[in-house]
Image 1 (cartoon, helix red, strand yellow):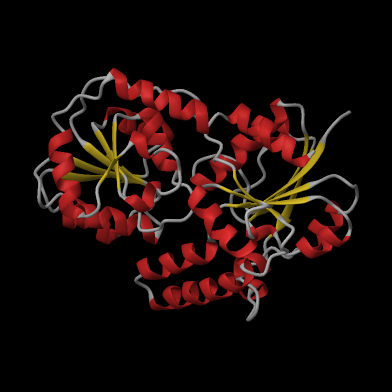
Image 2 (cartoon, one colour):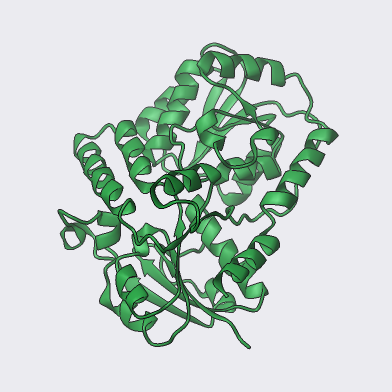
Length: 373
């Protein structure tokens, strides 16, 4: 008997060029390969309709997101209210098939779906209230800081008043524990992120620079890059490259103040993958301890040594594959030690074991299918 599933995405999951899109796209691909007939629902607000999704989906619906004043509410989070498109509910109610909501962003019609008797699952991409509180802390523009704070306040109320019987699938064990404190253990699950790399491709040996990469247009990522430039690589004279999309003028200036640091703006996917694989140390601190840091997963799969702080790796299961520094002094010390230490075969074997056990897309898709049916 054919199995049909509605998947509701907060964004168009192609190309899979940022963390959220990666988890969405490779989950869709893995479920399709297991024979699941997918009806995909996407909110489109800039990425466009993507024909590349068609091979994996029986049907695809695109919806307008009500941005700006149309999506604002004093009582509901903006990320939820701006996706309250009635056409979505209309299409979901046309059949009895189960629904996977990708993020609380897509949950405006959750109560309607449950009342209809549909099986509904929620994928929690982050503890969104924590995520937005951290965004506020990193943001320099006052109006954005105030918006993020208020959004965090609304999200905190929203995330703690979800239906108690709702099955929630978290991207990290840390996030799962947060939800268990509120709803108990029965319906809260850890489902690791779906990733593009299913094997370790990083080569043994040495590189000749350290790398931080990410979308530099996001305040949190810019803050991490600036922290590394100002607090870590002023202590050590080891080559350091910052790479990513949309760097600010401030970051561009800071990256070129020292002779041993530089910036690669808007690299192509090919260029970024080459940087990750050639770097001797991928150094990826985070100031946000919720969600899964897919750039860390990519560095583990494609790169050599990986240096993070505790927030970047908490609850991921990949702690053994990383070196962890607790502050700027510790980071500088670890970089100095690792820079002359070749990346070795035993580290590759350890990573292969961890990827196989935790981030095997096929196994995780099979487990999710068992949960739904």
